[in-house]
Amino acid sequence: MKNRNNDPYIESRCFDCKIRLIDTSDTLDKNKHYASISMVEAHNMAKAANMDLVCFTRASGNQLAFYKILNFGKWKYEISKKQKKQHQQNKKVTKEIRVSPDIGNNDLEHKFKQVDKFLDDGDDVLFTMRLKGRQRAHSDMAKARILEIAGMVENTEITAQQLSGNSNYSVRIARIKAKK
Image (cartoon, rainbow, N blue to C red; front, side):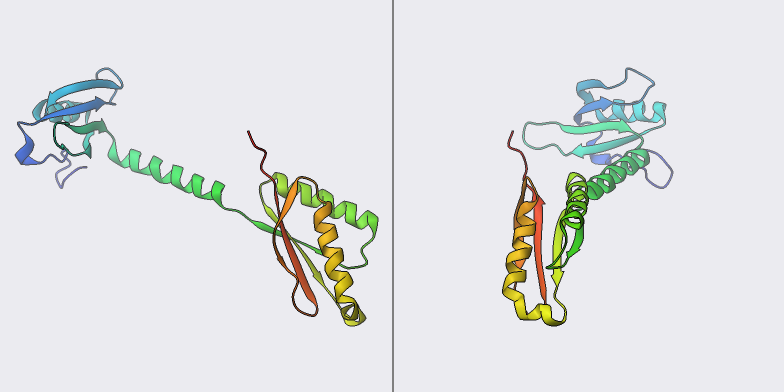
């Protein structure tokens, strides 16, 4: 880290300390490891490379403190980019497929193609069935039908189902992960 006058930040009480150091600057040997080096030498190396001397771990017991010479602003930016990318990859999306109790076979095949595409992308799929009018009188058949439809999708398992109520039924499915 840098202080106000853009010099690398160094604790004044540790000038005589020995540290472990990795020099990541291009001025000397790239990624050269120093098992034991004085803080003054490390400070001079960082200043010569116009980079920062960053402490990653403090000294504890018989272990030396661990420092790196690097551009701290660039390093923080790269870390934040990696975290954002990882967050986007871990984010799951639920796609909804609406079906009716009297859906035709061709329509059902088209829905299954969509479901396969969504599952290949890593998303969960939520089948929903809303009953209208006289369909509500046959709610027991609708419950069986939505479970049958959800069970037809290959290599999936039902992760949640909500079959209560008069007119709305939903079943969530997810791809079964292959065991390695």
